[in-house]
Amino acid sequence: LASAASLLIGASAHAAGLTVGFSQIGSESGWRAAETSVTKQQAEKRGVDLKFADAQQKQENQIKAIRGFIAQGVDAIFVAPVVATGWEAVLTEAKEANIPVFLLDRGIDGPEDLYTTMVASDQVLEGKVAGQWLVKEQAGKDCNVVELQGTTGSSPAINRKKGFEEAIAGTSSIKIIRSQTGDFTRAKGKEVMEGFLKAENGGKNICALYAHNDDMAVGAIQAIKEAGLKPGTDIKVVSIDAVPDIFKALAAGEANATVELTPNMAGPAFDALEKLKKDGTVPPKTIITESKLYTQADDPMKVYEEKKGLGY
Ligand code: AHR
Image 1 (spheres, rainbow, N blue to C red):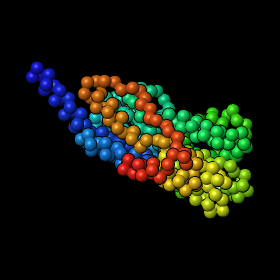
Image 2: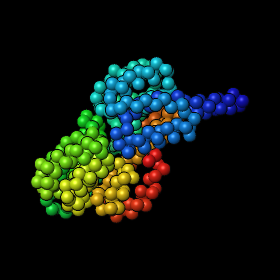
Image 3: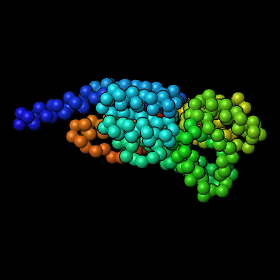
Image 4: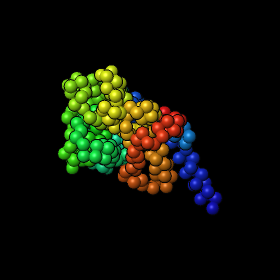
């Protein structure tokens, strides 16, 4: 009995004393900043020593950070991969060092055995939910859509585009007339939207904007206003993330819909890691988070208040 008890004490002490390396993409969006702060909060709450590395949008920096974590002999590596390709070599090194790798919020191409678990949303579904909202909203009326894509080569940019296209595929009245990357940032979202407006008769040919994240939508809303049009009315705006600022825009009638992405990817990853370390429980390959639609009808200012404190 005594040895069973000490085994248990040993197991939980080990879970609390974990060292985890986290290679974060950067701070391109409000959602990304929230994910970083939730990860730090979760680590602190659990007594995990978190080694944090900001890659400033560069895959080479992420690869360097991961190699550093391997050299330090961390208990696990969390990585939010900036793009989907090019991970095989470094993740094989982590595997050979027996360090479990958890992908947070973005997926990678290549064999699944390169990582232990991915905690992410169903990004194709996010695009579909946004597209289905527009199909319903338009109810058969013609609609020219401009699309602001996320970072080129990233899994959310690829999958959110795919999901939206699938949703509008059966509706010949809705067409994407322009599509360009806005790098998931407010500034680029505004700049690219300005180009779309200029190219499309000052915006008069545009019925809706689909942005792969809220920050680009917020930048684009500014561009629409500066062009003398009313965002949310003259040009409908649908995007993804559900950051606090988009709820302000929904409340002001300047945005129409957003699909929620939780910034708490780390919580489920730490849960899975702790179980793995405690008794060898192999976590599921993917842990999928919810994708909930919010519109102007959902009491946006109330949600805005609730969002504060959740890493935002
Ligand atoms: O990978 C998730 C995406 O990355 C978020 O939707 C976006 O805001 C972020 O930059």
